[in-house]
Length: 218
Ligand code: GRF
Image (cartoon, rainbow, N blue to C red; front, side, top):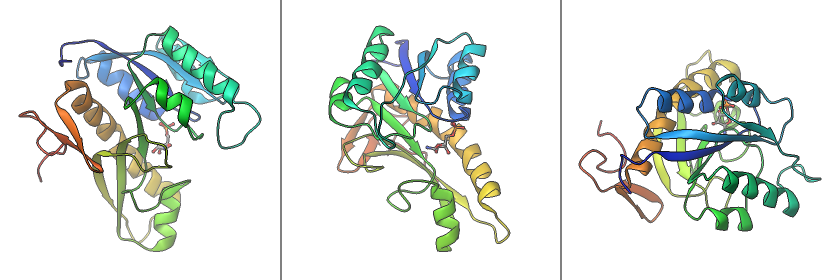
């Protein structure tokens, strides 16, 4: 695979979709060799669906089934079918609030990416910015990682640090984290789409001239 291929991305989100917009804009600007082929949400009124439709990108609400934190088997199959119908080669989770396991991950082996608003392995799970603030750390950040069977545990592609200010509230901190997310997600995706990377333990490392270490050198 080379950087000249036009990849097809499927984006899953449950919320307002600011990361989706950052990725769609980077694709439109030609800074990512890809296009968003479809957006799926488990929340009928999620902002991400309206934002996708406004950009002319097919966007569908797919009911998640009876569980609160995961998709049931039938829903998982429906998500896989919609992504396959759109011929996507990478799946990006962008604020998708359900855990994806077994059958879904087997349908896109090594091709599911997530963004999490902390420096993993610190503060996995929900509202990571609030967890960081409550714990009292001075620095938190953002992690883009490949998705494996665990929760927020897959190989790390990129991380970006964000300082916590003494007067931060959960809202101000989350806002700054999101600004970092909007740069980090497209950058991480670019490395993966270049094909010039490998997984070493828990780390995705760049193997090409541009991506040494998978992370820009300080
Ligand atoms: C982001 O903060 C992301 O890290 C987390 O969910 C949020 C989604 O935000 N997983 P948006 O819908 O992309 O604006």
